[in-house]
Length: 216
Image (tube, rainbow, N blue to C red; front, side):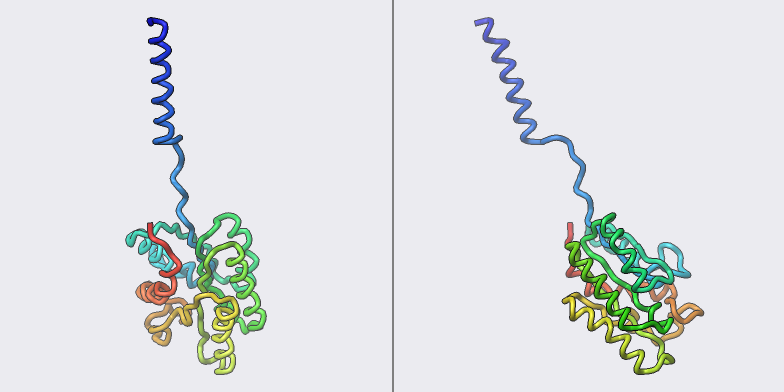
């Protein structure tokens, strides 16, 4: 009888350990937060603004306050074009594995009088690459000042609509809707919105972005 007691106690100890392992499992890191990547130019990089004033920074704050788990990566570079964004995107997708990619490019193509057919091809390639990476794209449309001529301005605006339709991607038709013609909302260069206009940019983006997100 005495020889059986230690064996029985050892069995109980092993059983308790096994149950604890099933109940709790090994310690593991929490799942990584999904990434929201912003691929843009100076409008999204926040040129002329403090680091916490740009619409992308305001978006990150809103997501945290409203209970969304997305981690915002702002990969915007002042002066970037659709060609530049297309070239940079593959490395960004490999590094960050985003769930959502906001594409804010094209303005510099137009301001430089670039070939809009090339801009369209670049944007379509960007959206296609995002979709191939199993991420959700959101395309942000822009307009050019009227001094570029109505034909060029109309063709440029149509680029975004055409890409969105071809790739079945959501679109914000005009990022500056509601204030784009008010020079008081822009810095002296008349291109980059002031800090007070940044919440209005976010207001234009949010209705199209919200359906692409998930809460905690």
